[in-house]
Length: 574
Figure 1 (cartoon, rainbow, N blue to C red):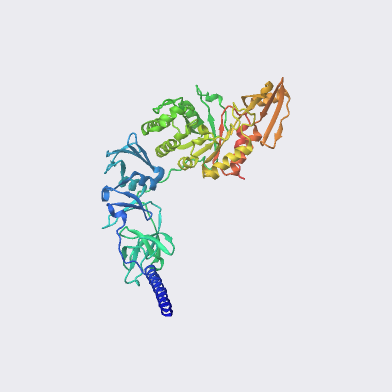
Figure 2 (figure 1 turned 45 degrees about the horizontal axis):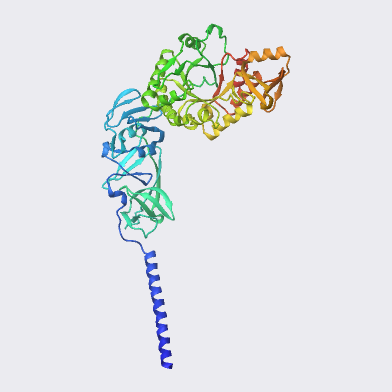
């Protein structure tokens, strides 16, 4: 009995010893594996096909086609690099490349192209392979300065944008045995490549004490921070001929004082216009889109243009979409119709000796936002080539799909020379509530939002100001409440009414302008007045934000004193 008990004790002790031994062995193996470097080599997955494409030290999951000068890259990668600079229309297989000064147009499988309307021969054509469109790199290099490297012998393609800053690092000479490029940020990861002393690397990031790098062979991976030293930053330069940028006319050192000339049928008799002191630009509403194919009607008048030139006033012809959304959608949808519009505007500008074009597209479907931006990208370089100033009218920001949301003010502001914010019609003609056409706080908010939220430079923004007002009629409508209607009035008509009715306007702190109301039968009449005081306040607002100037809607609504008041307030220095 006693011997048996001793035997069991010895057996239990042995099992405990064996268990401890096994645990220690496993722990030792784990410690060794976790603290010793992985010496195995791996072949990166991106090398399964030739010409994997790398951008900023990362594989794009895409491959290039062709070699050397004939290299082609997927459309998506080109767009990732150049954004709005590349536009593709699948229906017609049309590709349009746009820069600040160039518009290159070509089609899939074709070497014939046009560059700024002139014939241009591509060396290599775009092509489709298994539903992927490939673009030749050559025009991307020639127009945008894109740099493409094909590393040997790996056949890895690396793409860079001009202006891109790339940090370099090197393996120091004292690392005689070199270092390892690994798949991940830890020495337990397999080796991608041996890097000798003196190896130059592009550095793309940092993770847990490891640098994410790309070697001269094009391979990407990680190296320990202690294994390299930082070298100077490389700035990718564009190997293209630089051109003088277009400089928009800015009124000979003065702020722009533009007034729109509304031409509904016949042009005005210039002998009856009189002097316009301070006005340095007129924008007559001469041109209108009349169909979805891009045809434009013209009411332009050479006599009016000559009259303006004789006064030292520039003429920026207004091109409207007629506020017709379906027509606009069709015209913007295809390169051919957009180009037709551009060609006509260039011809009209030459015929009538214009100095600029003012684009006024309103009541547009939100789905046409991208195509409107593309239209301006295609039009602006060609107008600039003819020394024409390009401007566009935008509404204050709101939630209205057709009147505001379709406008990508940020991207449009980067393209055009000037952007007019039409800071009026706060209360429009059919508004269910009576109110100011443009209260000063509302106008200021409209300006501030575009400057801040959309990043449009102040020296591009022009404040639109009203020379008109509305007389509002509020009539009791029984149980239904009040019926509101309005009628547009020019400044002189308001003055005459105030005099006739012997009214005494009062200043409204809320709107920043004078206000008057009176009864007529059961109706209440209300007017928020536009006059010399409100116009001066608007000029001061433009100066407060250092805007490019003002644009008034429209000539003919003003009283005789307005131009002098506006000129003095606008051009005086704070």
